[in-house]
Length: 191
Image (cartoon, rainbow, N blue to C red; front, side, top):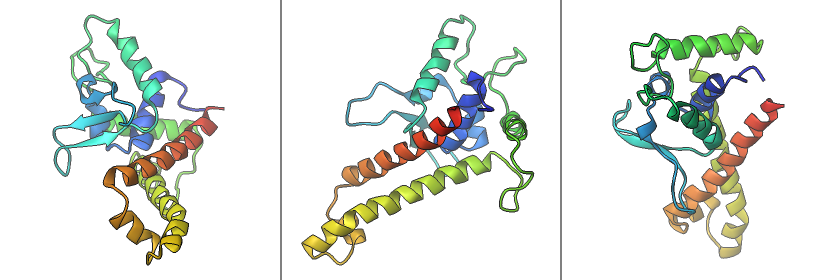
């Protein structure tokens, strides 16, 4: 695997497994993470400000790597809480351009083609991967509800999802499959 360094691996996880934008990755701070949750909840990242306003992002994969990174920094008295601190010692995080450059370097090291689908490899591909995996999880959930819809005389699985499953149950089903998708993608690449 190309991203075998702890920081590089976490950068790829933040972009691809968490679906974050480069500027969000660059400025991640320890206080944004809620990892200690009840058994029926999923760890998450809180954002006070995002492109479309405040929000939370579920951590469906990569918690172990994140906890390892946090443990590494916890031993440093001078750590300012940024997951990706600036190497210049001036305090603060790396820039979004540093995230972009590191991703590009990792893509080169992985010997990815110069273009994928007519586009040069960029951090946006991580977010695209996340959305593709998440949308396919919705397809799988709907597929699993087809039989239930048929047995109950509902017009479609979509009707079951929208009208008969609680929001939390529908979210749980999507997250379960999405977590499996992410594990498959990242575990395969660890070998």
